[in-house]
Length: 195
Image (cartoon, rainbow, N blue to C red; front, side):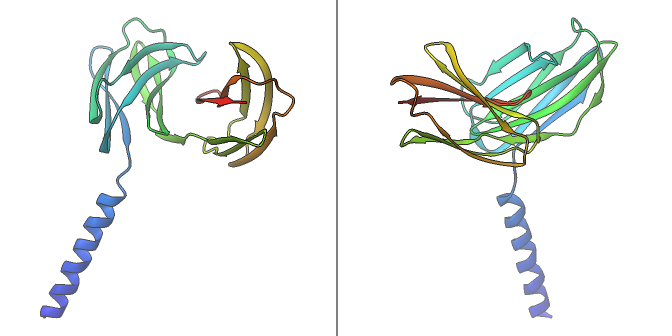
């Protein structure tokens, strides 16, 4: 009997440790009365976050950056002045972006989409090669754009495969600092390289 209790206790502890060790950041949007919704973010460890609300054109309608690292954040979003349509509510933290698509009907949230999680690409520049590794969980077309002193100098389609791994030869570019933008219609990631 003692052995059975010990095994059950050990299994319970193992399950509790596994659950707490695998807790990942979450983003929820809950419709409220009077053209409002509660946006709730929760993370296991404190981190700085950026919250945004964008329309389907990609225009930012609301943006807030936390002043300190937070484990949770709750905001009331007011849709009184927005037209009916589809919008993206996003939270960016570390190298991760959480997104929920919402649909407004009559200035109220009529539908909340499933949460999507996107991780930023790995980007390294060495020996005149820009090496990129990106887990494209949305499987949207991913583009790379290079800018030098604010001017667009090159662009390349990276594809829409789930796992993107590319090495791009930049040996023909002049020396200097370049901004690299990698992303799709929902997600953009920014890097700076020195050639």
